[in-house]
Length: 507
Image (cartoon, rainbow, N blue to C red; front, side, top):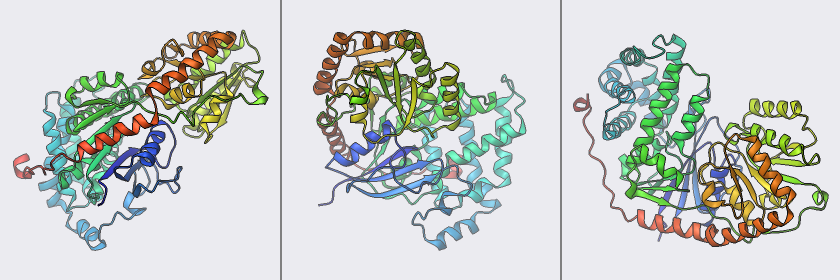
C-alpha cells in the first residue's frame, strides 16, 4: 500500500540552500517514515545543484524561480502539454482579460487596501485566480494594458491623503512588478495530487497549497519557524523603500498571512512566542500545536576541544552572514570581550555570500575595531557537531528566530550559549545553561561572554545542564514522533472541494 504523500513547500531554503529551516526539512524528510514527500521549492533564481543529498522519501522536486529575467517555465517543464501552453497564449486576448481577469484583479487590490474585508473574500479571490489561469496565460494577462490601467486607477483611490500621496511613476511600476512576481506560482497550475500540503512559512508560498486545496481538496498544515509577518515587517521598516512601496508590501503580506492562518487545518509553531503573533493576525487558537525542534544526542554530544584551540578562549557561532543574524552586534561584542581577554577568538561558520553587501559591512567593522586577529568569518562547514566543540561557548545575536537549531545543537554538545532573547530561544535556554540578552546590546552580550570565559566552574556546570535539558526535551525521536502523529491525523480529514463562485457573481 502506497504511503500518503506530502507536498512540502519552502522558500529560499531546502534543498538548494542551507539554514535552520533547511536543517529542519532535511531531518523531517530523512526520518519521518509514514509519508513520502514532494518538494516545492520557491527560489529567487534558478538553482542547478542540491545542497543536500535527498532521501528516498522524496520522489519529486518542483522548483519555481521568481526573480529570473525569464519566466519559470522558460527554465523548467512543469508537465503541461505544449499544445495547451500555446493555446492558453492564443486564448488570452483583450476581451478575455477585460471580462474575466480585471474584476478579480480589481477585487484583489481593493482587498489589500481595505481594512474591514472578511478573509473569506481573499480565499474566493485566489480561487478565482486559479480558475482563470487554468485556461489563460499568466504573462500575457498581466502585461495587458488593461491590467496596468486598473492597477493605476484602483490604487489612486487609496493612496490619496497618505503621507506620501505623490507616489512616483517608478514606485507604482515597481509595485506592479512585485505583485507580478509574488503571484507567479499561479502560472504553475499543474500541481501534483497529494494528501497534505505542508507550508514552512505563512507567506506567498501558500499559493501552490491553495491550488491543491481548490483542485483536489488537499488539506493544508503550517509549521511556523520565525514568524513570516514579523520578519517581513522588520525588513520593510528597515528598508529605504518609499512610503507607497512599504505600505503595499506590508498590506499584501498581512493579507496573505491572515489567509494562511485561515486555510491551515493545523498551525504548528516551534515555540510559544510565535502564537502571540498568530493570534494578532486572526489565527484560531484551537488549531495551535507546538513541536520543538529536535537533535540526535548521539551526534551532538560532548567531546574534547581541538588541540590547536585548547588554551585559547574561543567563541563559536553557526550563522549565515545576513541582517537577521545581526553579525554587526556580534562583532561589537567581541570588542567588549577583547578589552579583558586580548587573545579571544570569535569563529563564525556560515555562508559569507548570502548577502555580499552585508558581508562587506561586517569586514569593514572588523577592520575599524581592530579585530582582524580576533573575529574570523570561517565560511560554511558541514559538521556542526565538530564546530561547537571548537568553542568554550557559542553565541547567537539574531534579531529574529524561531527555535534555532544552533542553540540546542550547542547545548547537546555540552557547550553553554549566550544568545539574544528572540523567538523561542528562552524556551530552550534558561539561566541554568546560558544567558539571554537584549537584541543589539553588544555590551550586555559581551559582558555575559566574559562571565563564561572567565569562570571555568560556571561554564562547565552550565554545559552539563544544557546537555541534560536537551536529553529531556529536544531529542530527534520526540520531534519525529510528533510529526508522524500530525500526518496520520491530517490525512484522515475528509476532502471537500470548495464550490467555485462564478466570476460574474464575484464582480
